[in-house]
Structure formats: structure tokens, C-alpha cells
Image (cartoon, rainbow, N blue to C red; front, side, top):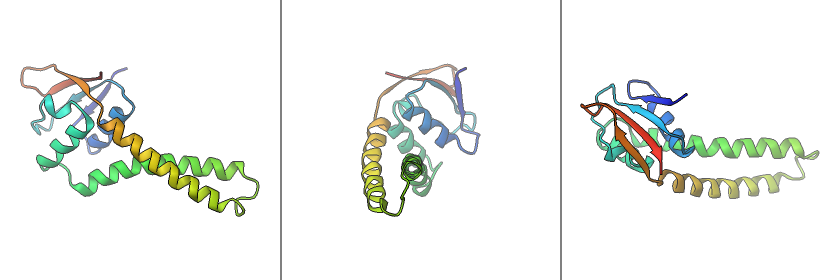
Length: 135
């Protein structure tokens, strides 16, 4: 089933960014008439820039979304490491150091992924429906 992101939904930006990061094709429907163009949807970076310039989202929300994606990965790793270690207090420095390294490399991966190019095709004459696929 094809994923659909509608700008009328509360969490549309989060959904779109996750799909960009997962490199999955999806349909973007600008039903809130925010006036997104094909060029605005060529990459996640362009989508973030367009959303900010159009006054749709704040920097706080953008940073929150990106941080949430990164923190989730770190949290999962930290939980797995804590469960695997029979003496968590003796390995606290390792967990913290590993968490920092993971956070830094994960952040680099996110920045690389959101800069990836996607092909965008308009599906409606007014430009409200777009099909987005990774190149």
C-alpha cells in the first residue's frame, strides 16, 4: 500500500521526513493549500526549507522532529546494551561513550539521508497531489 502524507494532518512534516529517511516512495497531498511545488519536494532539506519559508512550521518544531528521530535510535541502542550487560553500573562509561558516538554518527546519517534527491511528479492539474520516489 502506498503511503500518503496530507498537509491537513497535524503531524504531516514528521511523516514526510520519516518517509524521506526510509527512502520510501509516497504520495504528498497539499490539501491545506500551502502551495508546495515540485521543487519544494525534491529532498527533505528542500521540504524543511519550504515549510519554514511559508511560515508553516517553526524552527523549534523542525529541530524537535530531527532530534526525535536521532534520540529514538540512541535510546533503542542504550536499552539493548543495558539488557545485554549483567552489570550495568560497571559499564556505565561504555554505555555513555557508545551513546555519544552513536548519536554523532546517527546525526551524520540523518543529515546525509535528508539531503538525498527524490523524483517528484505532479498528479493533479492544480499541483496539490505529488508522487515522490527516491532516485
